[in-house]
Each structure stands twice: as structure tokens, then as C-alpha cells.
Length: 233
Image 1 (cartoon, rainbow, N blue to C red):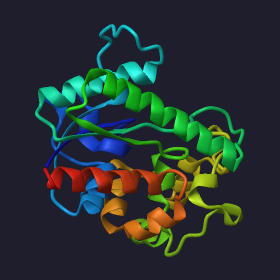
Image 2: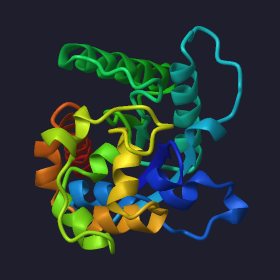
Image 3: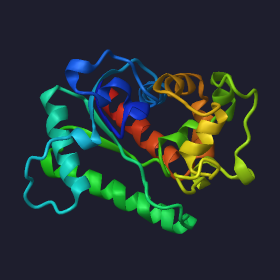
């Protein structure tokens, strides 16, 4: 199965976030996760969200829709069986959202991506992933795996007993509950693309689904369904 993978950066999609001449094939967090959920080896092509072309797309108003339209075109061009489009829910201020607001925001972003893909083609299925609030939250879905990769700690507890999807705070405050800051503290100040890959390879996907019910569970369920549908055709 060939997947065209779109994500935010190297921690998400590894070297696919780079321009093709500078890629060396190293994955990020998402490639091992997709293979684990799919239950099989996957060939990946892809691109970083911000690098998707600026081709004018008539009839689509939202930027996310236009980028998803272009991602579908690129997926078709490389002969992909499936498009997996992963985009963070929120990168803004440290203001938290209620559970209801979060569910609504995830649904809106998902709908924008699906509309853009369907406006281009229905020949390639698109599976949107909207991490709440970013891929680092999914990476902390299995804290045992995180501790195994970190050389700085032997066990991990999240601040204030929060779940990964509840973490948020000011990015500029290194002691805040912003997911990137929490993960940096777990890794002693810095984590890398390689760290994210290793966490994904070690993670119990069942645990990640349980700990990230708002955003990872629906993504994993939809990905499973899409893979099953491909297998039946």
C-alpha cells in the first residue's frame, strides 16, 4: 500500500518534510503509527503542509480546503492508494478549550480537509488526522514508550494529572503545560525526529487510542476502515 502523507514538519513526517533532493528516508512519528494501525508495511510519499503548492483553486474558500485539494492531486500523481492528511488543531495562545469546543474544532478542521479532497477526486480516499493539539500529544499517549526512549527519566507522569489532549500553555514559558514544553522536559531539554520515531515504534497503539480519545481514536478508526476497504477491492 502506498500512502501520500501530509504533516506539519519533521517530527510528524520525518524527511518527507524536506524538499525531495534533501530527503534520506528517515521517518517521523506518523510513519510507524500508520504501519501499526494498518497492520502492514507501507510505502510513503508526502509533503509538508506549508510546502504544498499555491495553485489557485476556484470554489474553495478555506486555506485547509485548498491545500487538501492540492494534496489529493499530488497523491494521484504518485499513484498513492490513500491520502493521510495530518494537521495540528491549534498553535495559538495558551488559552484552553472545553471538551465540547475541542470536539467541534476537530470536526470543522476535518470537514475542511475532506471537502478539499472530495472537490478534487473521489478516487483516492483521504483520512484526516487532527492531533489535539499537536503531534506531541499523541506521542505522549503511551508514557511507558516515552520513558523507554528518554535518557533523562525512567518513568513519566503528566502535569496535574492531565491527559495528553488536555495539555496546553504558553509556548514561550518552558515550564508551561504546552505539549512541546512538557516533552522537552521529559527529554531533558530537547527531543528529536529520531526520538519521535522511536516512541512511535515502541508505543502500544491501543494505549494511545485510549489516552487520546478526542483526536487519535477517531483517526485510527478511520484509518483502519480505509485500509480494510482497500483490501476488499
